[in-house]
Length: 292
Ligand code: SF4
Image (cartoon, rainbow, N blue to C red; front, side, top):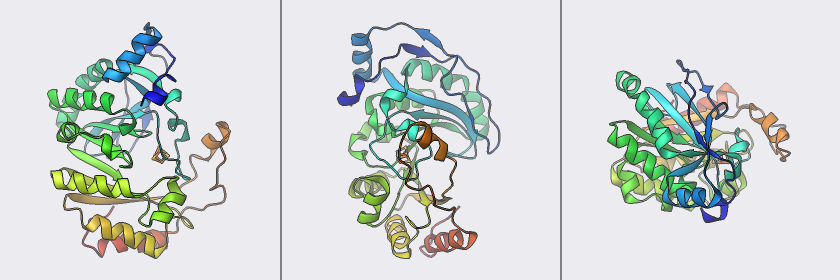
C-alpha cells in the first residue's frame, strides 16, 4: 500500500540460500546472507507498485504445515491486525521486511518443483498479511501457476477486498484465520473488525476454492463457548472447508514482543488445557467439520 511503500529503503535482494526442511520441521532461511543488488529509491517504488518487488520477512521449507505436502512458505512483511497473541510481531510492519524481486522468488520456487510434485506440496504465501501486497502476491501466484505449482495463501481475510477474482483463480487453497466469531471479541483480539473476514470467506467458498480454517485458542480471550460456537456456525456455512485446525496458544513469541519494545498483554496467559482443546475441537466436530 502506498502509505508503506516508502518505508522500504533497503537494497533489492536476490535469494541465494539453500533451504533445509523436514517433517513437521521449520527451518527458516530468514533473508540473511543473500546477495544484494542495487536499485535506487524511485525504481523500488515503481517496482513495488507493479508487484515486481515485495517486502519479505523470511521464508522456509516445511512439511505437513501451511498446506499439503512440502511447502515453500514465504512470510511477507506488513499486517493491518494487531493480534494480542501474535508470535511473529516482527512481521507487523512492512518496513521490517527486505525488498525481494518476485522473479527472484519464482526462480527459487522453480527449483523446488520436483519436491512439490513428489509430495503434493507447493507455495504458501503467509505473513504478516499477504494481501497487504496484492500486486506482488498476484505476480507470485501467477508465476507459480505457470510453473504448475499448487498455491496457498494464509490470510486473516481482513483485506479480502484486495484479492481480485484473477488472484483467487490462481489460489488452490486459502488458509483462513478466523480469530473470533463475536465481533467484540474479534476487535479485542485483533484491534479490527470481524466483518471483512466473514465476507471474504463466503466469497472464497462461492468461488469453489478449498479452505482450511485456523482458529487460535487462547484461554480467557477466545475460548468462550459462545465465541467458539459463533466461529463454528460460520465455518459450517462455508461449503469448501475441508479441515479446521484448532491451534493452542503458546508463549513462544513472548520474547519477540519484548525485543521490539512492544507491550505484550498476554504475559500471564496460559496454554489451553487438553480438556479445553478437546471441548473446542468437539464444538467444530458437532457441525460435521473435520478437525485437527
Ligand atoms: S494476523 Fe497474523 S501476523 Fe497479523 S498480527 Fe495477527 S497473528 Fe500477527
